[in-house]
Image 1 (cartoon, rainbow, N blue to C red):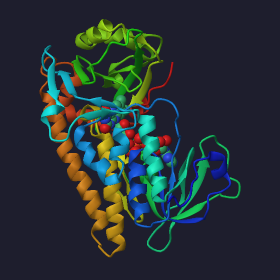
Image 2 (tube, rainbow, N blue to C red):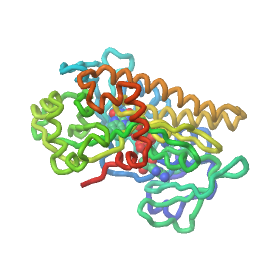
Image 3 (cartoon, rainbow, N blue to C red):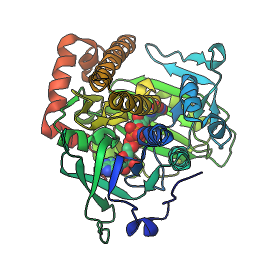
Image 4 (cartoon, rainbow, N blue to C red):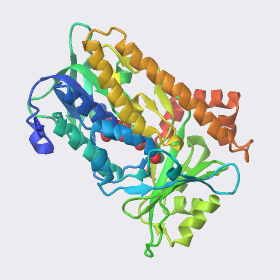
Amino acid sequence: MPRRCRCDARASRTDVSTRRRDVVIAGGGPAGAAAAIALARTGRDVLLVAGSDAAGFKVGEGLPPNARSLLRDLGVLERTLTDGHRASPGTCAVWGDITPHANDFLFQLHGHGLQLDRTRFDAMLRDAAMQAGAEILPDARVRIMAPGDSTRPHRLALQPVDGQTYAGIESIDADWLIDATGRAASLARALGARRIAHDAQIAFHQRLRSARDDDQDGRTWVEAVENGWWYSVLLPSRERLVAFLTDADLCDHRRLLYGDGLWRALVDAPALHALCTAHGYAPASRASGADASGCHLDLASGERWFAVGDAALAFDPLSSKGIANAIYTGLRAADALFHHESGDAAALDGYARHLLDIHRVYREQLRAFHAMETRWPEAPYWSRRQTDAGTKALSLRASTPATRAATAPSAP
Ligand SMILES: Cc1cc2nc3c(=O)[nH]c(=O)nc-3n(C[C@H](O)[C@H](O)[C@H](O)COP(=O)(O)OP(=O)(O)OC[C@H]3O[C@@H](n4cnc5c(N)ncnc54)[C@H](O)[C@@H]3O)c2cc1C
């Protein structure tokens, strides 16, 4: 039975039930919800502060088949499979040459993947957290007022995202704080962790619609181009999403975000362009931008805190690992907290070291994938990813404040 139900923002505004919590989780994406489910199930008193509870479109939709075991661990596999998401039979990559290379999930052990409605999927996970006994505070953010240490809890401010204040609740104390704030990692950084960026990649994305409604291709399409790569998926809404990923300094943000600039740029990806025009697609939404950089924290845990999901370790979307990593690290952090409280002095460090291992393996895999595209060795996007000198220069550039600012795309 749900212990408390706080899905109504107005109810929450004056009614966060106690001033001290075992765990406060900042961020209501998959990482925060997974940690909340696992911790609430062990009887912890958990408050999940969800951030902006966007009702609109959220990008990041491909769930590979091997993520099913994580959904099973969370107890939401059946619910996910019957919640109106679109089955994805595989991928098709135009990478290394102009021939599309298909990879069918039929030949893998886990069955098909999914193209998610991310807004619905994330809301379902938060609902499962509530069912497990966590309290959810929507449309609110956490800020650290005074960091905790070995003798005292963290003192945290709760702020509605609309800029108002909660009557009578200026602060809340938490024995543990979990940073699930996504790539911003704002709380872990405030607690002293350093965010290490590997690139300044940016994603421009747009939804397309066709009156013909005859597109049945549920695969994830990926196509390399001279300045980056494109991907496209058929969403559960029957809209087709197209996205262009490139480095922030290699593109004209305004041209891509304004009018039909992104749609016109799709001609650079001939296979995807042919797929979209063959089905009569045209833009159905404005183009938007998103930070798609790879980055990780030098330290993903510390005195009374953990970072999980993108906050701890954000992957290049090419890997399609982000959601699975978010759920996995949410579960692992809950496990490490439990072991720490049971007297395992190595649990916090063990979690942080495990994430660094994951990061190392991921970087090797990404490098191998980039090495398969040999058509534009002189082009900056590829040379930065295919040579040691290029990779080093890319990391250095990504760490400068100017480049970090440029990674946040702004509307024209
Ligand atoms: C273009 C693109 C395509 C992608 N495609 C895929 C894909 O196909 N497959 C895949 O697996 N992954 C993909 N990803 C990555 C995936 O979306 C992320 O890895 C995933 O959303 C990470 O989950 P999270 O819970 O860590 O963070 P998020 O989902 O980013 O959630 C963080 C939440 O924290 C909230 N928040 C921020 N600050 C605060 C605060 N101070 N207090 C409280 N809340 C706060 C935010 O409002 C947000 O709701 C893609 C990403 C991009 C950019």
